[in-house]
Length: 383
Ligand code: MN3
Image (cartoon, rainbow, N blue to C red; front, side):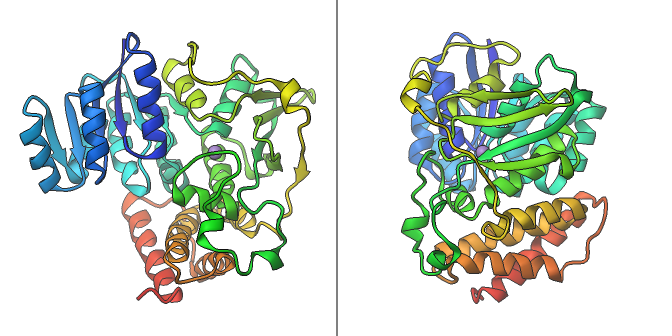
């Protein structure tokens, strides 16, 4: 029986993690979960999984739930997240929380040698140097949950890692793959929220349409697999069947394929290095798929991807600015304050404005994050 702590239980990855755990009640058990404000969903998960500890965002919600479930311990806020992440009974922490709140709990879990399954992009994008160093120091595995990184991770099992020449991350292209920049000028929030292959939350769906999601994944891949940005490539692959590939020095390429279903990489992180059946996911039929398509990425068309490579190469605090500016810009777009293409403009301006600080500590990262957000808010006429 593997005991699991889960940060971000009611998000898209969180709910699919609950799904995987419920599909294998003899193998997996939740001991602690955290969630934000979705109390109705929380009740369902608590009833189905009976964790020992639940952390929510507000004190009021924690008190209300405590009255309903007296045998369960309830906490709230940042302290609650750390308690969930470091629960003594857990074997593995699944970090599926949105935003930078996942960082400190993850570092605390690493310190007490919990295996980390990471789906929270900000943790590696903003503090990859700190997280990977801590993981090395405490001999902790950081297991990828995102489909691209899981594909790379699966492709390098048993391989000579010193012979890796290139990581090739595939990108579906998001909701606007086939549109020109001219055609992107007036797109609506509704159009942007419609993703052809994956069903995800609003923020990541917009990030897929701008290609920022892939950009953040490039930075994550750099930290997870320790390769320079020159050895990381993105390839447009609209079917989302090949989830990513690795090229070795003898020119061999190993790829991981599968039905686009996030429960596959989530489950692999939970069962690693073993595998288990996944009852409700349809098997991949390449005969039905028929054709797979690949196109070189156009960096002028997808400017956010170019920004991410630039931020990654500049290093230090620049990825924090990229991420914070993007979060605020996406929010401003969703709220109707800026247009779709202005997301790119404000990120570019925020990056131009910033003087990189190399090897930042947590408090510097936090400061830079707040500054970049403030800058974007003013720029996008929110304040
Ligand atoms: Mn992905």
